[in-house]
Length: 303
Image (cartoon, rainbow, N blue to C red; front, side):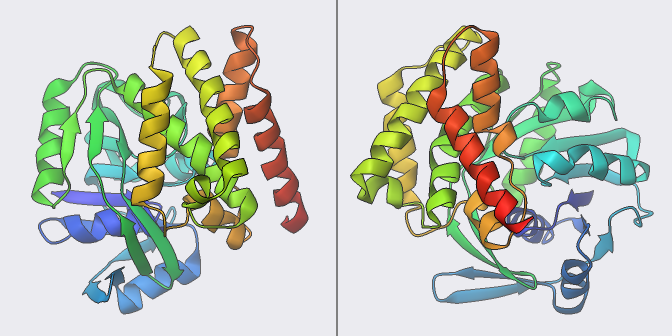
């Protein structure tokens, strides 16, 4: 299978490297130094004291002329439209596209560029840190969950098999929107908070103030999710969030890495999405609204 990974950051490189052992994988990125590093040095994955190198073939966004059987989308939400517009030529009528992006609402943008029946949405519990130049640290593991909004279970099962063969524990969900909400609870409570504090994920366990803020953020989001038709048990969600924080305690969330590298974040598709939905449903989400504004305050300091 020919697989294109659009967005050769930490997670894109990680998934592409493992899948590349069995498939023809190429990478697309908008950052020339990253493309050059991948073509020159390949990808190095650091796990504990072990380093393993994988070959890589990369293109600048818009320059690839290969038609992919599967596209895995890992660009930040705010760049989804641009990435798909520039790389439309790699997507054929039978190309499957799997988005493993953070946040909510990516499917609405993607559906304008392809047949919804070929679109899969997913989440990943892996955590990776970009060390630069194609070198990444794999700092947390977990299952990948995918699903089809159009009910194309056959496609979901086919791509599940591809991921499983590549070493990824993968499940197919018949209610992928519920899975998206589940991942959103983790991202909105851990990502933005640790990014603002410029610290590792374990902060939400070690710092009583941070843990309380994370709890309030989750409580607001659970209420919004219920209004959106997805009821969750608040205690179960909080237990899950803090369990993941424990598993990935030494890692840095993707939004924290963005701020450390002076990049724009996906906060509008995470905490911002909850704040907007709360307003639409006549609810209040002041913690999520404030977190969104604080992240944008930080961004303005370096943009």
